Image (cartoon, rainbow, N blue to C red):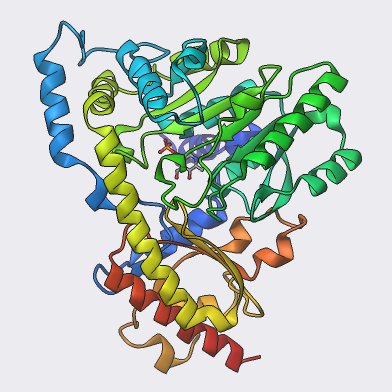
Length: 451
Ligand SMILES: Cc1ncc(COP(=O)(O)O)c(C=O)c1O
C-alpha cells in the first residue's frame, strides 16, 4: 500500500465524531488526573492515600460471604440459576431481603406495611449505575444539589450536559433559605431533578430530618406550580454507617412525600462489600422506576445474579450483627482521628465536619489554601522545589481530595472550597492516620511561613 494512503487512513482513524459527551470524556476529570499522577509512582508503606473512598478492608465479612456463596449454590430450589443471567429489576430474594432488613431495623422509620407498597430495583453496577441511569432518563437541564457536592457524580452530570445549581450546606444539610432564594433567580422550568446525598460526601454532614422535610415540601410546591413532577433523588449511600447514637435516626424522605417525587438510592457497598456491586432504588411503583428498570436491562441487567443471591442470604442471616461491628469499627477510628485533628490542626481550622457517620472528615482552614497549586498541596505532594522538603528519594507523600474539586466552579461556595479538603479514614489504619495529620500540620506551617 502506498504510504500516502496509509497516511490518509491514519488521519481518518483519528477523526472519530464523538457525541458531546464523548468529546467531554476525552480528557480525564481533574480529580482523575490528580489521582492518576499520584498512583503512578505510589510507594506502598511510604506514601499515604487519604483520597480514595475505599471502605475499611477489615470490615469486609470474608468468611460469611464464603458461606453465602456456598449456601446459594447448594440451595437451587431457593436460588434458581444463580450463575445464569439475572433480570432487569433484580433477584426476588434480594428485593424481599432488603425490605425485611429495612422493616426489621425500622430503617427510615419504614414499616413492613409501607414497604409492601414500594418498589425496589437493583442497579447493574452499584448505586453508581443507577445514578448514571437517572442522568440518561431525565432531560438535560438544571440539577439542584448541595455544595460541597459528590464530585464524581456532579462531574459526570456536567459532562453529560447538565447545569448544576449547588446550594451551600450548614450543619443540618442543604440550606433551604439559599435554595428558596436561588429558585427565584433560576429558570425553574429547566429544573431536571434534585440530587441530595443524605450523609454528604465529602462533608459527612448528616441531613437533619426537619431539613429533609422542608426540601420535600419545596420540591412538592414547585412541582405543583409547574404542573410536572420534579424527581427528588436522595442518595443514602452512608446511612448504614451512621455511628453517632446522639444523632436522630434518618427518616425516609418517602415519609414526607405526598406526590410520589422521591426516589431513594441505597448501596450494600459501604456496609457489606463494594465488590458485590449492589445498589438499589426504592420508590413508589411509578413510571420513573419502570424506566430505570428498562435502562438497567439496556446496560446488561441488574448486578450479577450470584452476587444478588449472596447479598440476599447475607441480609437474611448476618447483617444485623455485622452492621453493629462495622459501625463500632468506624466510630473508633473517627474518635481517634478527631482527637488528633483537634490537637494538631485545631488552631488552624475554621471548621470541620465528619466523625458521626461515613468515613470522611472535611476540613475548612482559616487561611491556608489547599487547592492543587497551593503551597500546602505542594508540600504534601513533595513538589515544592525545595530539596529538603521534597527529598531524594521523595519524602512520604500524602494525597487528599482538595475542596476545589467538590464545589461548583464559580458557584456560591467556590472561594471557600479553595481552603477545604476531604480526608478518608476508611482504609488506612490508626498509626498511618496519626502520621498523616502530623504531615498536614507540617504542610500548614510551611504554607503559613510563605504568607
Ligand atoms: C454519595 C455516594 N453515592 C454513591 C456511591 C456509589 O456507591 P456504589 O458502590 O453502590 O456504586 C458512593 C460511593 O462512594 C457515594 O459516595
